[in-house]
Length: 287
Ligand code: NDP
Image 1 (cartoon, rainbow, N blue to C red):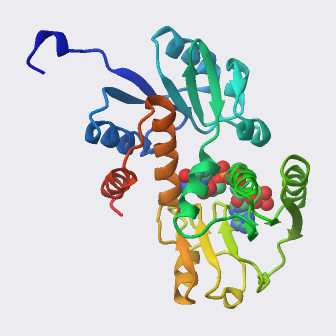
Image 2 (image 1 turned 180 degrees about the horizontal axis):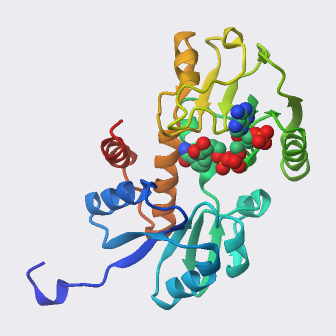
């Protein structure tokens, strides 16, 4: 940048509003992608309390930010400050990526989109029979996007009946997939005709790395694709059990990386290299 007319000291701004924020590694992978692709953008990791969320959103607008991520505890509350929601974000009822289009702020949810993108590297969800453990925010996003990707039927298995039944009802009502709820009985047996098995609970997340799903691992077979939403550690107990039985696997790190890839595409229009981001995440998390 020697020529005077090429110098630009004003990067476009993106970032994250969450609380807590210090342990969120997203900033590392986003900045790695911006640098690698020479995108004149920055990603600012901000700790924002619930009472300061409105001011933070107004601040981002005032400073001309291109967009931002929202994480816990703002994914639902931020919606009131936005102009519009993407289709799946509306159905999921939560937003994690905000994109400025003209003067409008649009809320999207990339949790499930990142998951489906990772899944597609192993198998196409279209026509598949899917089992999801969990019915929280991650499960909701994954179930809706798997349904939009053409999954034929989705069985939700959750410890709490109410959340499980509500999620199955949502999928039946708002998507083309057929969904059911199964109670999570002890030593849960996975039906042999299941194509894709997904852990969308928080079981196995660092530091509880020895926590195990209460399932009969011998009901996994080598025709199944097994995925885990837990990104730290990426090789969970569940994925190790699945691999040892010959299943193809998808880890939570891929889901997280793909969320970043999709977010950067929304903000910059550029398709960034997921491998650069995955490597940076693995390095900063000592994986
Ligand atoms: P929520 O708190 O909304 O939901 C947690 C889910 O886990 C519920 O279904 C809960 O069941 C279930 N659960 C927790 N402990 C147990 C247990 N001991 N036995 C059975 N079920 C249990 O969390 P989220 O859905 O937001 O997040 C879930 C996980 O997904 C997190 O670990 C997070 O790290 C991961 N995630 C990963 C992302 C990625 O990019 N890789 C993105 C977003 C989330 P119940 O309803 O009965 O309480």
